Image (cartoon, rainbow, N blue to C red; front, top):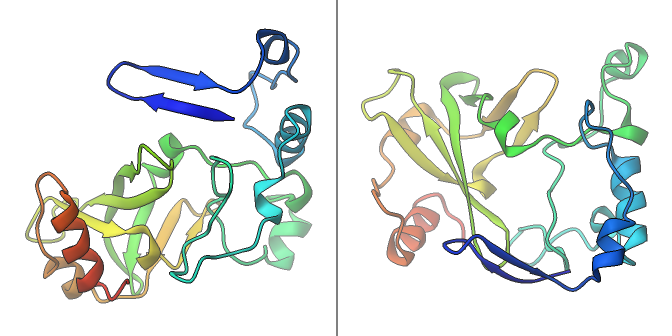
Length: 193
């Protein structure tokens, strides 16, 4: 669908006609995007539903043939959540990156800070790293973690969990600009191939 993305020029080329875009299903402006709306939109453009594609590449990273968000929730809702209508799985509302930046981050159930930024590959649109701000809890102000380190994102509690000790995060290599070498070093540090 997206054939070219030039972030610095703020340019996006689409493989769609003007009429296709004009006639596409419109979202409700006062509601988050629902899974039902997403399915209708993808059907309009003849695209596969990304949540039905094979779950992971050998590296354990979800692979989608089309750019698209990944629903930031793992597992299924508890019976209490379903009974209380806090989360309707059939009409799951996706979380935006703006929403995620307010999530608290817990390292082995100990607060590490909160998500301050989401870093993605501008070629594939794949989320690569998540930056957390330590809120004065740790020595440095900001830490960058590979997205694969995160165990789950809980939209009901606005929290994210990593199964590592707070000290592991604190001892992670520091990177100011996140070069390819920094990316490799961080991935190796966290045991990601």
